[in-house]
Image 1 (cartoon, one colour):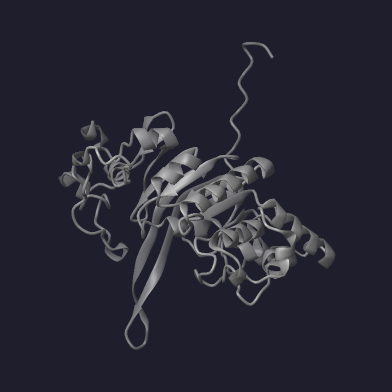
Image 2 (spheres, rainbow, N blue to C red; image 1 turned 45 degrees about the vertical axis):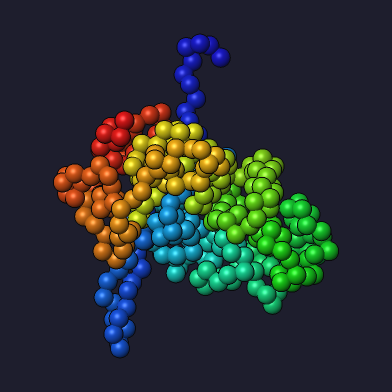
Length: 347
């Protein structure tokens, strides 16, 4: 190729999300009438490039799990402009074929291993205690109907061995496994139908530190082997920084900062990101605790969000204009964007 040849265009992102909105009704009274709506996710936009790990962080209630469930088409959301590899994910989830949804029980283009494999997060039971591991992991394969019974059994045993479990475990029940083993079972089921995108919602938060490392290393190996793309949802910034190529920070349903992992970790530009990082425990007892940022007040309710910038009621650099204007994402560095016009005040 000559030096004057035009550069090849950049590959399109695997996942594109534009102005994602998710709200939930609030009912009251004897007749259970709708009296309001909780804006759990408010106009969130981002891309996920093929083969990368995007870390999604924020406090509990920030909306990061709701974003993950919307990406997997597990819940209705108010924007039709979200898709994997150019295909629209959502138009009307009630009319879309079940096989196109990204639940682990109906994996297609996206799969979602859950934070608590024993929990009941919504309508789908992650690991049904009445099912064997064989029945759990082959669930997506049964729904797709592309394999005979013998092929499904062989596929399940292959997946169990790939995630570090014995093939004989297929006949056991979930209560017979440790937390780390149950998480591996969830990962095996997520990989059953060769998804392009895996949305990992707090995959290691409930595990011991040593087991966390094992699961993270396993996910990294699977990413390289199967060419996976991850959206890694967590609240532990140290873990997210370790595994992610880019980090997106959410607050009260909105995206406030997104950029390369090192830039967000070592040069945060939004006051909320700085507060999150200052809250990370330091192993050195001699570290300067005076630099820790202590936010004042409670997190506002998403039922009645503040006007303008949602973070202004706790922000140390807020001014009157923050109550009027909704901040827009602005570029502050290479591939680094922040929703705060006063980021320069931070220095």
